Length: 212
Image (tube, rainbow, N blue to C red; front, side):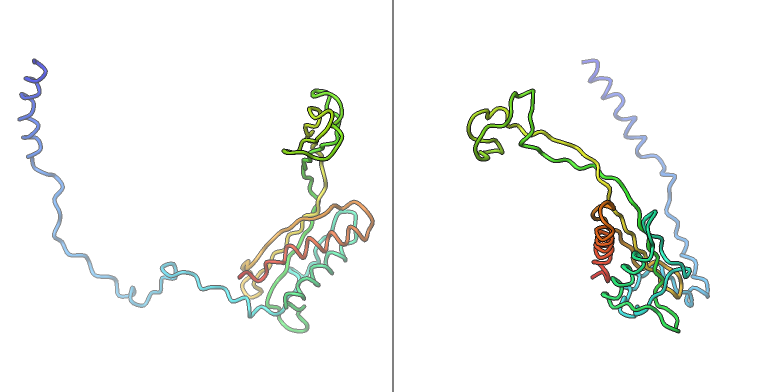
């Protein structure tokens, strides 16, 4: 009961506080006029950027007139040749005695990746024995004897991949217009295998040019 009486006593005070003078009064002053130069100033940030027309890019040359470096301890010529060939397939020709439309920069490096495989034929001492005989059953388990020993063993191993990155710049202003990277294969194997892996990476990197 005393709590209710206290609330009734405080209520008139709260109502009177709400009826007090509001210090925030709206001003009726007019908005000042825009400066004279505002009518002649173009604000590019107020409009979306114009879509880039890739159709006018027809020719190219190496950025800074420098050939790209190839895989370490390997001849860089196959890499430069692979990039040039891939650009040609996309309608881009080397500039001959004329200014180029595009500047091309490319690099290749070797990186390591972790891969996992499930080995159903491995011996697992925890479940005991080798997998049972017969075909693969439901859920990846085998029919026949030793079915409890056929739980897959996950193996993790490391591989080396070839990563290619290609960047295209507008030759008039030096602004980047397109870039992509791709990886494939390994640098191990015969020289022909390495060259094929290199060309595969370059083709993958340029597969999205020009963007739709």
